[in-house]
Length: 293
Length: 293
Image (cartoon, rainbow over all chains, first blue to last red; front, top):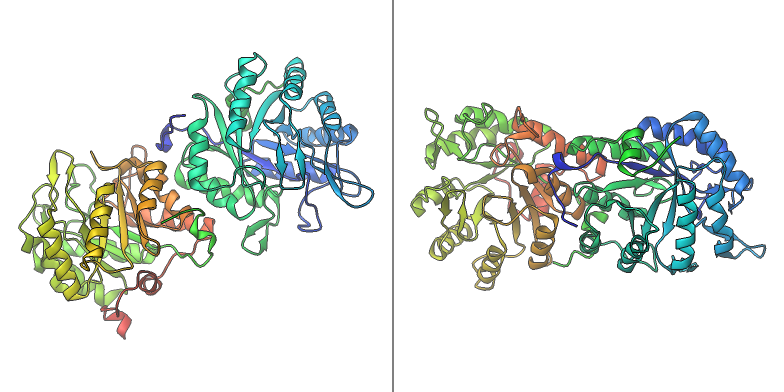
């Protein structure tokens, strides 16, 4: 994709906050929201700070990652009651704890029912390829399964974000476009720095950006200490960005973030300084083709 | 230099901000805020110092006409007050006046004042409507004088061949490690101000070099942010860019410095003091009187 560096020509910046995730919990940062009311309060604070999309994972009452649809319903209801932020559910669910204490990735059969969550989320993510996620487990995302997942989302008018962890994943997304399943413009997430996928370096990110089809909208997700460098670099190349305690529990080296909103606030300040306007919820919905009722 | 990871993941990587106060090219017909007289140049430099700049890049102008000048007395009227009133690192130009290609001795005259840094344009290039001429014999003479006077060359790079030239001169013993590069990207007919251009140039410079970047015009903010995230340093100022944002003239040089200092604060890269700048660049003993008190 042809990239402009002229800030004034870039679209407004969509900030997504990934508040909870499906891996770590309050044990490593007590500010990470786990229960539905906490998640909704944090989403409200992030909305006020400038986030327009809230990426959602669910936890059970003990804070363990879960695919329980009732908990997802509760989270969505609580968020919608407090703010108009765009809701986006991650279709990977996360790492589920087994009775013997080991972790395994959620299975395809546990993940498919996410297409039926009530109330309807505005967006769902799909993951565009199979790889060894963080060396925890094989993260299976067969193309046939993705096709079925997207078809179910289309039936309910749920918008899709395509998570790409390596170059081939971008082509897998375009294959779903070719099959008439995924609608253009495709909204891509370039996820760099998860072990098993593409690491983050400025050059590798540049290669990923070059590979994107013209007209795509896209954001960059990286984790941990690489988040800030990659995010500001992406921001001045026209990307949207994601931040939040799912991706990074620290505000700076050795200093835990106090809240998701604190991370959003910093990105808003940086965006203002470089002259990128931050998209409102309504503007973000239009840019990503999200249809809201 | 292999930039496999942004080197600012090292938290001690302080940021050097250079302010290029006036240059010799932009005139008051396009921005009334450009300093002309020695007094104005001194005043603007002090404002930048207070805002976080640790280096000022100095050209002087005929106070009556505003036209660029290599008059040593005018340089003295800037350098002496700054040495008394600040501990700024002074970087004097040896470029002379854009498009006029002055005699070598005029271009090199400011070295008599023994600044800690002086610009060293490592090759010739088309610049706007003319030729910016830096033939090999000039470069040899400039390098020799800088070695004799203990002035560190700031190697200005307008395209990749200039790095190759500098490396050859290093191999000849004319330039000493560690080299300090200033990338000048986005000049009319020079290398473009894009992330990919910068990544390519960074591959060419030797490990252990330091580097800074000038994004001309609309490239200013994107290139500054790339440098911030990749462990480079940043030059700003009315010599390089008269607009603060699209269509809005910058009110002062300090306004540019303040924005970069604000970005650096949010990013978590502390701004280097002049003394820290001397350490980072390996400059010899400071010659400023103030720091000797």
